[in-house]
Image 1 (cartoon, rainbow, N blue to C red):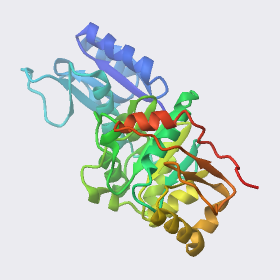
Image 2: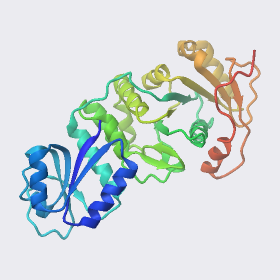
Image 3: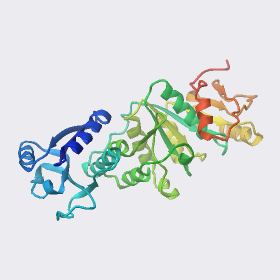
Image 4: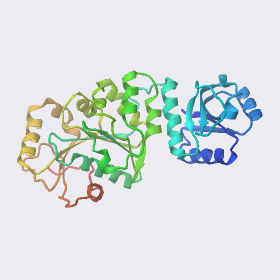
Length: 339
């Protein structure tokens, strides 16, 4: 679905900049029309309906907004025109990517178009470990980076109880809590919201950390399905970084995933927990065929629990980002190492 967006401002140069940015970065998401005068605006609105309109105060004041699902006011702190508070406001003359994010977020809330479950197209890889500190996030990001190097669109979804996103990314966008709230409310278009608030760094798309640890706790199994499905519809590779708990959310992601990377490291406790998960938890039986063991930090697995295993070296560095980028050059694709 493409959003029909109308940009109505007397600033011709500014309208051109917004239009050019959207045409380059969101051609599959937005269809743009531009006008610069009240007369032009009246003619356009008489001839066609729009999903969203960004309008200057001087133009919105006399406009017939019946043909606009979401009329929004382009404003500055120095506006002198009195306009009703009924309109959502978008601040002018800031980073255009932020303006587009605001538009998509606000329209996602009112569009009432939920994403159908089960229609995802991405390859979904879940990364999990029964052991804290095994390097699960490093492996997840290394895998994501390796997919990006292949020219694929990659979405990294962090569902850890406590997010480590700030360690690896600059976090300039809106929190993933915005998505959690929409999922919990049962209203709005989650896929559109994701397109609006996602950030991209080093070829990897990601969402910024939750505002609060409790925000992720509100997710039900149905919420997880919709979240994963919505992410999968807007990327080629979806990489999901899970908490170490084997809870309802983790099990649901396992079910949806095409591949599971099960990470362990050299300590005795890590080996014991891995063995216990394989022998005492019926979840492993359901995912064994799509699971690859990742022996991280130079770990040696004497008795592999699956036929698929990849060994990663120990990378000595204080630079967390440098570690996952170094490991991304090593194949993390599913491969059989034992007969």
